[in-house]
Image: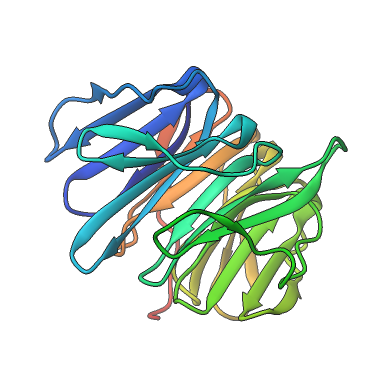
Length: 239
């Protein structure tokens, strides 16, 4: 069952899912299963291009964090108390977003890595409630989506709570720029931000779990019903 998808625009794509499942596709070829070495549910996959080198990460239950090295997944040390729901990276660092604690929802967890081990960023930023995904457009900026419609923009250690009008849990966030940003969530919630206002996008009524796309604007949504589908056309402004 797929839970998250990521592509880098060069013909490479990766999907992860329950019980440690992962599949990779290169140059438009067939999907190939790649062993992860874990039976933990993988709930997030993301990556970045640093100095011309692709880096791919996956995360999930029981604090699981993995890095894809060639065709092999390698385990990365991380706190076992954190459940990872989202991953996002830029040239400076990679962020892992999730929750910790036994509540429903739990407390927010934000981990970061500059290429080495992931460390807790919450002592420096206000983590708030459970965080289900993140988007890091530039090195010093992170947007998060989380429980009960919460969207937070971090610039350095400064947090700004963003009003979207959503009340459902927001499980995904992605964009090509500050004037072309999407959040998705439960009950078919899909909103687009054009730099001025959030507007609803028709995405059905089923729960949505993940969104990812390319710099060109092409994007895909993973649904709780196991579907992976392209995001329909949305009027956009130039960034």
